Image (cartoon, rainbow, N blue to C red; front, side, top):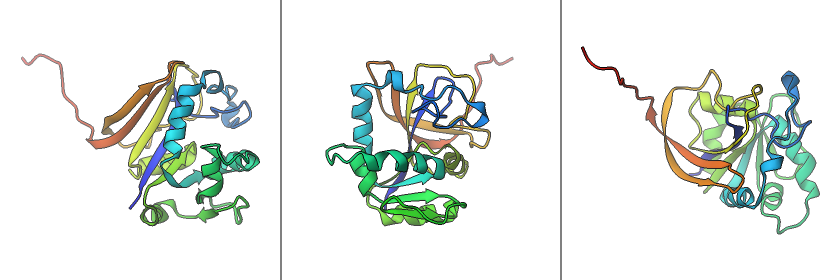
Length: 205
């Protein structure tokens, strides 16, 4: 049985909205799109290549799917380690508004909570989520993600959609792997290790 993994770019203050381009997602009057681009370099590329090499299939929100479908079919180099995987592998799209999908190997997911366990059982390796801010909130709230791959960029944005919103369940995580790129981007792979533990530094009376 496969695992569900989530790969996300976030700022120091936890914003994940529109990392790739100024017009990627302007909802909520977001004006800072494209904040990843100045810090993208070979080390980051190597991390992403490694992550995509583990995919058996993808689970995407509709907005991210539309962005990917407009871009990656135009990248026809079979040696491209990311485009080749996205173009060839199954893509499951969580949407209640679309009735058809044109990108090859794409299918609709109507009920995420009901269908994700079945999807995981179909694949030997990873069912990967990339971006997909809205979808992630549902997956996080119901503890459906087996591993988080978070790339933290040394920028503060101030406003925008955040990875962990008000619906996130308190929890502890274990850092399974980490690296830092030459641009100062911190990559960490985290797995849940149980409910949130608390304590106190206060001196006892």
